[in-house]
Image (cartoon, rainbow, N blue to C red; front, side, top):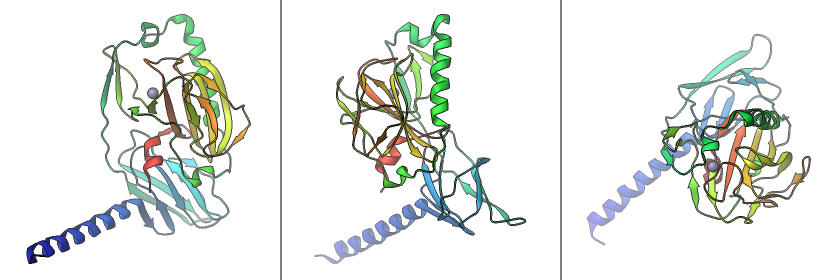
Length: 280
Ligand SMILES: [Zn+2]
């Protein structure tokens, strides 16, 4: 092999190693007695380790610490600047650690052909929409000590990705709220699998916007929401395993075609499902 090729290969290897070190540095941060695993990136779920028995607040929310001192939290779509984590191990032993959030940009998605009743809903359905929103919000507030999210997530359905997290949506030319789910296109009736184990906290056959709706609690505020379903195969309170068939893809609610819309939350913070199935 010519010298210059060997030299180039050597440089390439060194650069690749450096990139890997920098990348893994993004996946782990440590300050004082707090270790955090994951990227401080909008939409990310992060896990952390504090001293056993500590009291921890993130975004002013007091989080559950397991007996090993571990906890989970997530960053919403518009997280920016710094995240402050307060760790207290006793009276006069409170510390604040600040972590910088990486910037993130989102796409603009224009969707035409949405039925008018979904772009500006008639007065008569506003009460129904409020009821739907209230039951979903209530299910996402469920606080359990389960840790199903720790086992990792799998893709809940086969099919091409037709919509991503965070994109700004414009329906028939009217700017609307961003899209928070990961859309997977597929025919009505295709299986929907539980991306992680969990407990069913809500099922509804037909919400105004989201149609057939199912919520799974993965523990400690991490939940999955599946919408536009044609069929729900599990019941509220039921325990499901990762990979179990829980529903079927549909075209119910505000859709332009059959697809699964999968959302992930940490309480009311909306996370990016794609980051969960891509993480190493
Ligand atoms: Zn969607």
